[in-house]
Image (cartoon, helix red, strand yellow):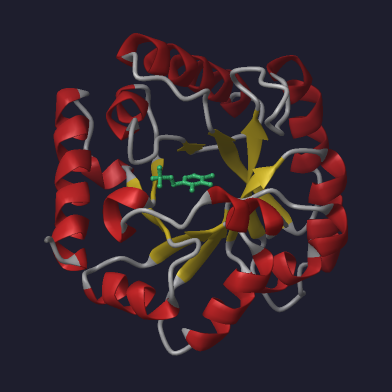
Length: 237
Ligand SMILES: *Cc1c(COP(=O)(O)O)cnc(C)c1O
């Protein structure tokens, strides 16, 4: 049995090793701890082990945990599917949203962002493997959508996020991440605030870091396995 603090250390060591292999500084890569389905108490332990950034997918659950953890200086990232009628609590409570997949969501987040808070950091989710089951902007729509979102007053367009099709083949993992890197590179020339590539999870963070990832989203490797998926799909948004 490993403790949560040990698993945090192991994840940090994996990131450091992957950065070294890629000739990058580990300081460029943020470990986002994905705490969906896990209790507030585990987030407390992860914070005590040195983590500040937490990612959540399910609105109801995350709002409760953010409330319970208000005494800690945590930075909250919304990374799950977002329905347009449920954007307000996200605009009011989160610091980042990685899963913006259409203009309408971005417009609502910008309108609903409270004036006293700094601009909300957003990433566009890209459907990089063109899967019918996944949401996300398709690469050929990206230039247009990014131009519209970049104009919104209360958002800062920070970059791109993707969940490539699962694969055990490192070459295939790398190909999808390389495409993401190239898309960000093109867009950055037009939108200098775009400095973020949110890609890589417990199973493929090495491949993602090799292709320029700046945020890896790690759940299982830190918090352990999650309950079966039906709980997750029932709680969308
Ligand atoms: C659950 C989730 C993760 C974490 O995945 P693990 O394989 O548990 O590390 C990362 N990103 C998103 C968008 C997720 O929904």
